[in-house]
Image 1 (spheres, rainbow over the protein chains, first blue to last red):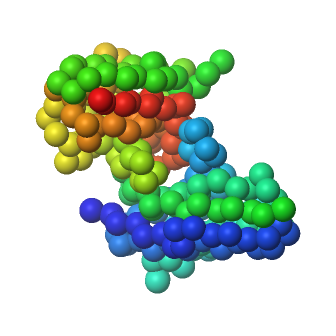
Image 2: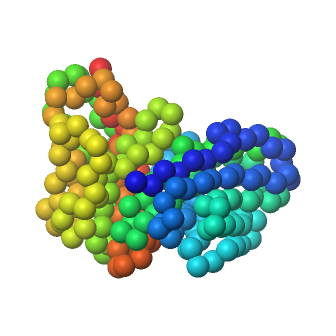
Length: 111
Length: 114
């Protein structure tokens, strides 16, 4: 089955700096890669996603890149703000929407 | 209107008891899921149903039994609760039409077994 690894497990940045979270996946049949943000005590919520026919996608301060050959994908947050502090999960999904999550990255943005 | 709802939000019970968690979605999705999130925040899929049919059944003890009376509801029944069952359980739903789509999560049910 699919195995998703995520790094780093914790990340602390100064407000205004950029943050990068990286994931790798094992199953080359995976074709959908969402990123979820989970604030303390809340549900995971989608912030951006990318499909395997696209190499990069951007939405304001958030961007995701995908390297299908290397089976890597990354989340980039620019101009970080304290409200970006949360746990971020990457995931990889097969065609049947069998979604496997990475272990999560706890991002702390210091004001 | 709440898209994916779960009841109860909190559940505190003793070892050996049987309990149920209910989930409902009003998004018209055809696939629903149960995830377990442990104390280390790891999100692990347990079950997935598509139009009341079980399609994913991970290595979960058979004390856990999902039931889907219709495509808008997916309930989770747990028998003989153990300390290790303490976690947050999330229900989710999505479309499933040949390609994967975003999964919408419920608010979670925090289960504490004492």
